[in-house]
Amino acid sequence: MDSTRSKKSLLTALCLLALAGCATSSPQPPADTALEPTSARAPAPAPVLPAAPNADDSVIPADSAVHLQNPELYPDVWSRMRAGFAMKPLSGNLVEVHERWFASNPQYMARMTERARIYLHHILNEVEKRGLPTELALLPQFIAPTGRLYGLKMNWWYDGRRDVEASTQAALDYLEKLYNEFDGDWHLALAAYNAGEGKINRMIQYNRSRGRPTDYQSLKLRRETINYVPKLQAMANIVANPEKYGVVLADIPNKPYFAKVQVGSQVDLGVLAKLTSLSLDELQVMNPGFTRWATDPDGPHTLLVPVDKHDEVVEALNNLPDNERVQYRAHQVRRGETLSEISRRYGVSVAAIRSTNRMTSNLLRTNQNLLIPVSTRTLPPVTPVKVTATSVTAEKQPLVHIVRSGDTLSSIARRYGVLVKHLAEWNLLHTEDILRLGQRLKIWAPGGPSVGLPGAPRG
Image 1 (cartoon, one colour):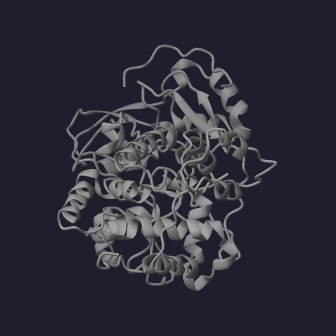
Image 2 (cartoon, rainbow, N blue to C red):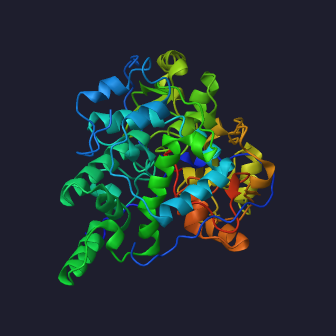
């Protein structure tokens, strides 16, 4: 159907991982070339409990999933992924164009592979459980309107499109549906994943009625969809043989990065950060589905944490009194008071006060009651993850923009002459996201790459 479309979203979240770097110009990426056709309080929580390729069929044999997960056979996720590559290869000029661009921009490749560290093992597990080709683990992830159609919960507190577990399941459900609908042709299924199955079906009928071929490369499609599968193929080719392209992939062990903790009821991420060695940044990066400072009062009541921090978090939650799980301070607005003054008084950002109180503007009323999320005030700002890779060179660094008051994705995109969707994609954001003061955004000016490895859902 036409409304069923998925856009690029590297878990994908990975928006909170803006990278540090020098503000230098970056290279021009390949243009997408259109070649002719080729809060109510929840009850007191219960104690927390430690909770080989087959190219002919384009699927992995069902008994291979456990085999691929064996770290003794495949010490890192890349060797494991290569062993599960099973799609029919796509060739052509567009694949070569994107191979050259990725290979000539090692900083971008290093950044994307480093971001994949948190989620890639989990995504590979889910792909393999279904017997699907592991090239799918390199895909961008899932956003609305398809998200709602596949049961992803979305509200003020939580966005299932950004939740690594929920969005992965929804994306794979959709991809399996498309694979079956297009008679086992992954190229057509992926085109439909990008453009919508209605569009692809119409173009197939158009070609068929004129006696033309109906394969992916013979369809007349929009520029983005024409480039979508070649970009994925280029990325898969580089993962299959990084040495050939001079690319250094991040060292990602073939073992889980995160573990799941049952939190029982709503909990303030700032409170949890204070009680453990985890930072608020880490909690947000691993749980981008929670779009506010706390988990959704109606669930899901789970958090992802690093495997080595699991027991520490469980102990902290078991010792946390119910009345301290979410911390606010009440403030009654006085005549003439502004949000900026209240923000300075409590050491909490204007954005945090607005989001806590669901305000659409900075206007206040005398005697208005506000909730101030005081647990966030002493936490350090979100810091970017630094990429350390020998292949990163200074001249390949993108521009860095530090978000100031009044900045939006649209205004920043206009300033640098780039598209909003690209700016969001490079920083693993959704186009409707609210920016944080001091947030660092990477800008590949002009333009930038538009496909990459899964990361967090953008957030």
